[in-house]
Amino acid sequence: MSLDVSTPSVATSTIETDAVIIGAGPVGLFAVFELGLVDVKAHVVDILDKPGGQCAELYPEKPIYDIPGLPIVTGQELTNQLLKQIEPFGPVFHFGERIDTLERLPDERFRLKTDAGTEFITKVVVIAAGGGSFTPKRPPLQGIEGYEGTSVLYSVRRMEALRGKSVLIVGGGDSALDWTLNLQPIAKSITLLHRRDEFRAAPHSVAKMREMVETGDVRLMIGQVTALHGEGDKLQGATVKTKDGEERLDVDVMLPFFGLTMKLGPVADWGLQLHENLIPVDTEKFETSEKGIFAVGDINTYPGKLKLILSGFHEVALMAQQAAKYVYPGKKVLFQYTTSSSSLQKKLGVS
Amino acid sequence: MVKITFIQPDGSEQVVNADPGVTLMESAKMNDVPGIEAECGGACACATCHVYVDDAWREKTGTPSTMEEDMLDFAFDVREQSRLSCQIKLTPDLDGLVVRVPAKQF
Image 1: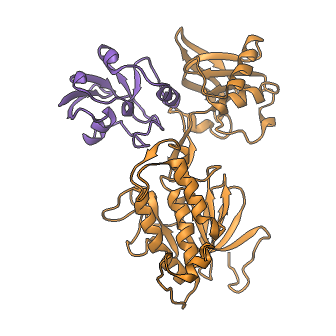
Image 2: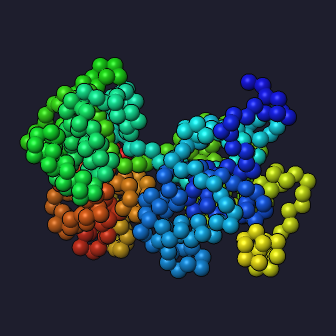
Image 3: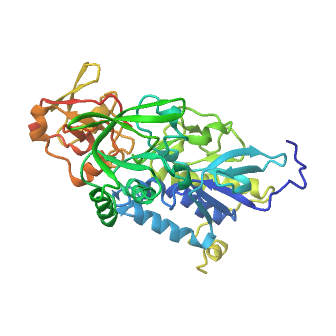
C-alpha cells in the first residue's frame, strides 16, 4: 500500500500523537513522566484492564524494597504514586487493548493498530511491555491447539455461540464461576470442573453455583482434565480424572480458566531484532534496531541488564532525550532539573 | 548445607546443596534444575515452580497456605503431594528432602 506523505489516509478513529507507550507497568508509567518533561505527549496501551502491569496483576500486595527513596512499597502503592506523578502530563490510557500491528509510514511515523480496532499514528514508539502480554494459560493437553477458537475458548465473546451446547468449564475463580452462572440458562448442559471443592470466586457466586448444583442445573465435578477427544476442530469429549477414577464426558465446548501467563506476543512480528525473546537496545538511547522504536524495562536486553524497576526508570530518562529529538527535530533539548527549572515546574503544575 | 534431590519425570536425579534459609525454588534455580520455571520470581503468583514432595517428607515440609492453595489452582496435574517450591523455605530439618518435578509447568 502506498501512502501520500503529506496527507496520510487517516481513518476517523485514528489518534495522532507524539508517542505510544506499550505497557502501563511502572516503567511505562514513568516513561510518561520523562517524555512529558520534554514535551512529548503520550498514549499508553495495555492489555490488562488496569495500570500497574505485573506490579498490579501479579503482586499488588507484595512489598518491594529496592525503589530508591521508598524503603518499602507495595506494587499497588507504587502504581498509585506513579499515576499521581504523571497526572500533570495528561496521558491517555487505552486499557484492555493489545497493539497487534506496527508499520512505518513513508513520513517516518508509525501506524499502530490494536485488537480492538484503535489506530494510532505516532512519531515514536516506546515498548515497555515487561514480560510480554498477559495471555490465558493453555492447559498442557495433547492436541488442545487444534480446538482453540472453535471449541476451546479462553474468553467468551458471544454468548449466543454457546446456546444449546454441552459446556465444560474448568477452574475455581471468578471467571469460571461467572461463566457457569451466565451460561447455565442457555447451554444444553454445564459441567463445572475444579481440582478441589473450594473456590476462590466471590462467595455469592459460589453460593449461587451450589444452588444450581442442588437443583441439578449444573454438574460439579472435583478433578482434572487429562485428555481431549474430537474430530478436526470440533471437541466431542474430555477425559476427567477424579478421586473415583477416570470418566469421559461428552462436551462440545471447554472453557479453561487457569489464569494468565506472559508471552512476547505480536511484538515478535514487528521486524525488530530479538534475542531470546528480548529486544536488544543500545545503552545511550535504549533504541531498538529500528529508529524511533525504543524498548525499556524488562523487555529489553543489553550488556549488564538487570530486570529491576529502578533500571527501567533510568532507561526511560535517557530514552526521552532521544525521543524528543525525533518529535522536535532541530530543537535543542535543554537538560534541566525539576528542583530549579521554572519551565519544568510549570509543566508539573507546581510553579 | 541442606541436601535436596530433584527427580525428573524421566527418573533422572539431581542432588543439590543449598544454604538453609533459601527457598526450594531458589535452590533449584541456582543449580539450574530443569523444569522449575518460577516465572514470577517467587511471589507465589504463577504456579510455575510446582513440585511433588516425596511422601516421606510431606510432614516436614508442611501444608500449603491458603494463598498457595489458590495458586495451585493454576497448576496442572495437581496432586496431594503438590507444593509450590517458592513457598518451601529450606531448614536443616529438610536435609535429605526428595521432590519430583512435574512433566510440565504451565
